[in-house]
Amino acid sequence: MKIPFSPPYIDDSIVNEVVDSLKSGWITTGPKVKALEEEIQKLSGAQSVLCVNSWTSGAIMMLRWLGLKEGDEVIVPAYTYCATAMAVLWAGGKPVMVDSNDDFDISVDAIRNAITEKTKAILPVDIAGYPCDYDAIMNLVNEPEIKKKFRAESSVQEKLGRILVLNDAAHSLGAHYKKGVNTGSETDVAIFSLHAVKNVTTAEGGAICMNLPQPFDNQQLYAELRMRALNCQTKDAFSKSKAGGWRYDIVGQGMKINMADVNAAIGLAQIRQYAGLLKERKRVFDTYAQAFSKLDWAILPPSISGEKETSYHIFALRIKDFTEEMRDKMIDEIAKSEVAVNVHFIPMPMLSFFKGLGYDIKNYPQAYKNYSSEISLPIYPQLDDEKVQFVIKTVVDAYNKVAGK
Image (cartoon, rainbow, N blue to C red; front, side, top):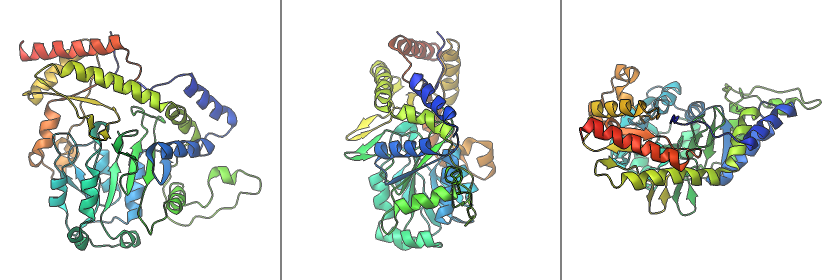
């Protein structure tokens, strides 16, 4: 039985929405992008939402908007995909990597110890869709002693008066943080990924959620960033296309990172049925959890803690007392049955580029421990119970073979 890792969910409603966009004669940024922004705003509870062409470009733009410059520091977890740190580098700053907890998410104690007068932002990451401890992080940046250490060096930083918290919510669209608070509304800024393998996709894309405190106006900021995402042009193509609407101005050095309607159409059709799709992801997750909870060698990923609940993006299974080499052998055995699994993630200090910048995995022991025994299992609505049971059997058989049982 051949089981892919993360195929996109495409049904007739999605095909019809894309065809509608194609037939409309308008395929770049227009009404479908705006409709998707409104749907994500409703789901997340964010003050305003701007869709762009990727998580990475959205993060770069937000850090440039913050006024990041050479020498400025941004705290990121060592255990994440490279885009988290790459965005900091492209925005002109320095990623300061810190260790994680055993629930995969960033350590708040490690954040505290890494803050200096050069710290301008913190980028926590909701690994596998499980939200970080945002109450602790937001309380930390608002502590009088931490605020006193902050050195504002741009108009935005002066206005904020403290370290910015930008949630890398690439995995966590639809996650709950606590009663009345969903992922996307718990920090100053949160950015979702809408990449092809995410719970909701636009093939490629991202969504910036803005929740900045007063005196910021998040609706006004949306208008500013929308312009920045289109070369700081005062009119988008949709407005310019109207009779007599050709004249525009360029009012700054912007980026070209807008999302197109033909992409937004995919996500728009998906998000309108997301409650049902999320329920199906939970079904798969819970079936895995029920099966593996009976095995003393399986470490289950976090899913629900009090009011906090994951988006069920990834089932990050860890194998107790396995080395990295044993984990790799287990993946090889699983592949023989044509079940595609993955690893989330190779910690950034283990990657050649970041090693070349001086980062050393020895400084992040929990990140390495999380990675070295982790296997990500397929989880998506199209997996029926027969396929889920086949995945479980395949994983168990692979463990028994590698462990010599």
